[in-house]
Amino acid sequence: MSKDEKEKTSWKSIKTGFARTKHKILANFGAAETTVDSKIVAEKEKLFALFKLMKRLNKNVDKYEATLKEILIVQNEMSHDLLSLNEKDPATIAYSEALKALEAERIRIEQILEDYYHDPFRLYLSQFRDIRSRLEELDLRRLDMDRYFRDYSIKANKGKDATSLAKTENKHIKTKEAYEELSEELMNDMILLFDDRKELFDPAFALFIKTNAEFFYNASQNYQRASSYVDNINENDVVMHAWVITPVEQSAASKNVRSSAVFTSPKEYSASSAGSSTTSSPQRNRASTISTTSPTSDRYSTPPQPYDPSPPPPAYSSTTTTTTTTINRYPSPVSRDDSYTPPPQPYGQPPPQQYNQQASAPISLNKQSSPPLNSQPRAGINNPQPVNLNKPRSATMTPGGQSPQGGVSSNVGRPLPVPMMKKPAAPQGKKARALYDFEAMESTELSFKTGDTLTLFKQNGDWYDADLNGKKGLVPANYLEML
Image 1 (cartoon, rainbow, N blue to C red):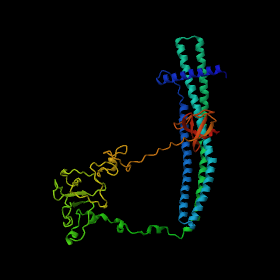
Image 2 (spheres, rainbow, N blue to C red):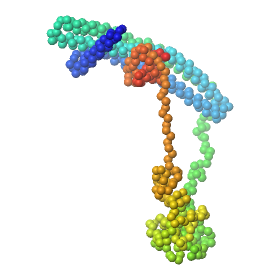
Image 3 (tube, rainbow, N blue to C red):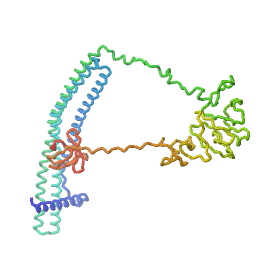
Image 4 (spheres, rainbow, N blue to C red):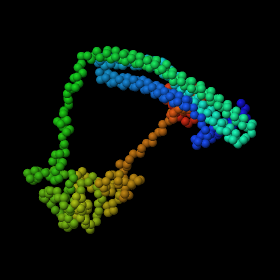
C-alpha cells in the first residue's frame, strides 16, 4: 500500500469513527432509531454467564492445587523440626518418608491435571473470547446499518437527487446484509458453545475426582506405615501431663519486694533503731538532705536530728551558719556574694545552695573535693550549668549543641539519624509476542493486537501480569509466543 493510499484509509477511518460516535449520541438522546436483536442479546447473556462460571471453577481448581502444595510444605517443616528434636526416632523417620512419597505423588497428579484438565479448559474458554470479539464487530455493523438508514431517510424527505439517494441506499443494503450474515453465524455458534459444556465438563470433572482419589489413597497408605510406629503410645496421656516447674503462686517472682517497710517508710531513720540505741549509726536516706554546721560550732557533739520537711529560716545566724545541700549528681554553681539572703522556698523544695566567708564546703557522698571557687566562674565542661532534673535531658538542649546558658553540652539524648531506605529496583520481565487479537472483558485484563510485544512479569495459572506501552493487566498465556 502506497503512502497516499494509507493517508486515504486513515482519513476514511477518522470520518467513519466520527459518524459512528455521532449516531451513538443521537441514539442515546432518542434522536435516532436503534436496531435491537433480542435473540442475540438473550444468547449472549446466557453464554457469558456460563463463561464466568467456568472461569471461577478453573480458578478454584488452581487454588485447590496450591493449597495442597502448601499443606505438604508445612508438614515437611514439621518433619524437619521433629528430626531436630530426635533424629533417630523411628516414628519421626517414618513420618518424614511418608511426606516424601506424598510430595512425589502430588507432583504426578499435578502434571496429569495440567495436561488433561487445564489445557482443555483453556481451549474451551478461548472460544468465549473469540465470540466476544465477533459480537463487538456485529455491534459496529448494526451501528453502520442504522446510521445509513437514517441518512437515507433524511435525504429522501429533503428530496435529494436520485444519484446521492441511490448511493446511500446501496450502503444501507450492504451493511444490513453484513449484519444479518454475522448475526446468523453468531446465533448458531453461541448455541453450539453453550451445549458443548457437558462434553468438556463431565470428563474433566471425572478426571479431577479420580486423580484426587488416587492421591488420598496413597496418602492413607503412607500414613498407615508411619502410624505402626506409634501404636504402643497412648495418645490420651497428653491430657494428663503434669506441671513440672514451681507453681506461679509459690514462685519468688510473684513476691512484691517493694512492699517492705524499707521502701515505704517516709522517715530517714526507723523508729526502732532511734529508740533502742543512740550510739548505733543511723541509716541514711538517699532522698533526704544533709545538714552540716560551720567550723564555729561543735559538729560532732550534736546528735543527729530526724528529717524535718518544714521550710528553711529566712536568714542565717552570724555565729553559726547552717548550709543545707541537696544531694545531686550534678554540681551547682557557687556564688561568693556575702550579702545574699535566700528567699523563703515553698514546701518540698530544697533551699538554693549559698556560700559565704564562714561557710564550710558542701559534703559530697563520693568524697571528692569541691570545684575551685572563682570570682567569675565560666560556663563550660569544668563548670557545668545547673540542670533541671524535673525535665528530660533533651529539654535543656538547643540546636547546635549549646546549652541555654551558652555552655557546651554533650550529644547524649539526641535522636540518631534515620538511614535512607534504598528504592527497590523495578522488576525485569520476559518479552512475548501476541499471536492473536485480545479484547479485555474485565477491568483487570489488558487488550492487545496481533504482533504487539508485551513485557511479562508474574504468571497466575494460565494468565500473566503484563505491560504494554505503560498499561498493565492480565493477559492469556495461550495468546502469546515467548521471545
